[in-house]
Amino acid sequence: MTRQKQVKRKKNTINGWLVLDKPFGLTSNEALGRIKRIFSPEKVGHAGTLDPRASGLLPVAFGEATKTVPFVMDGRKVYRFEVTWGAETNTDDTEGEVIATSDIRPGPDAIAAVLGEFTGTIMQVPPKFSAIKVAGERAYDLARDGEAVELDARPIDVHRLDLVACPDENRAVFEAECGKGTYVRALARDLGRRLGTRGHVTELRRLLVGPFGESDLIGLDEILEAAEELEEGEGVEALVEDFVLPVRDAMDDLVEVAVSLDDAAKIRKGMAVFLRGREAPLNTEVAFASHANVPVAIGSIDKGRFQPTRVFHL
Image (tube, rainbow, N blue to C red):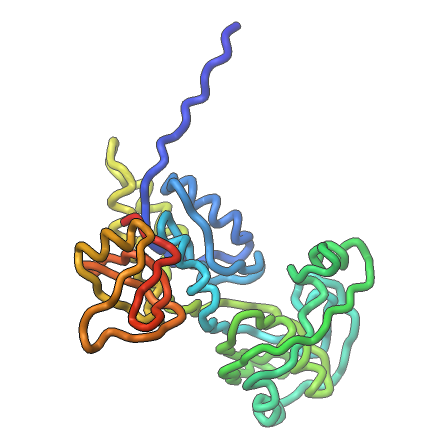
């Protein structure tokens, strides 16, 4: 009996960003897997994991956009989250076991009075169930195995923490704008303790990551529906046109320098070029060069000389 050869699905060359509205209940990798099956890209990744019990903005990078992932991940993030008072869990959300309880229910005035203590650069102990490595192992793996996990406090930046609503005495809804490494679950835990009660996250939604916000969000169902409506023989080009943003959108916060066609060719070969023009910056740690509005490379500028570090093939 001859074994049939498995036909490999053709991979598509796609460059850009898809800002996915990840649904509740899926891991980030499961959501990414569904995107892979729809678009069949040559290369894909995501910028910033969301827990299965969280929904919202998951930036997906295709092709050359993967070279800009660090700039998205290092950007600010905005979360809207609900805290339920009266119980603290070992995971700081609804997935864990209750480890402490309280009958105290803080009112809006009491909550608002302490929010200033949780803004700015503050020290935060990450949740024991987190991806932080302890002696080479993930903290959540150790915690699940019943081992004692002790994590050190570390500085985080919380740019804004607002009380949005108090639906009832047991719940409060917040919106936080924060920097890299902030755990919203830990914010909920520490808010509960500071208010003389206990608390854990019962709903969490990410609204912004770096340059991408709510207006960019595309639902998974919307993508699936559009994929099903593709006419026979039609490729994913229509999906890319409708849903994929340009690579350069991830670099909105970087200095951009326009270069000539000749200089663009040199940069693509890894060569440094001197920037022309009175407006050209002399020194910048991170910048990107472009020609005709198309990114050429990411690099640095030293004494007016652009040195590429990552070249785009667009």
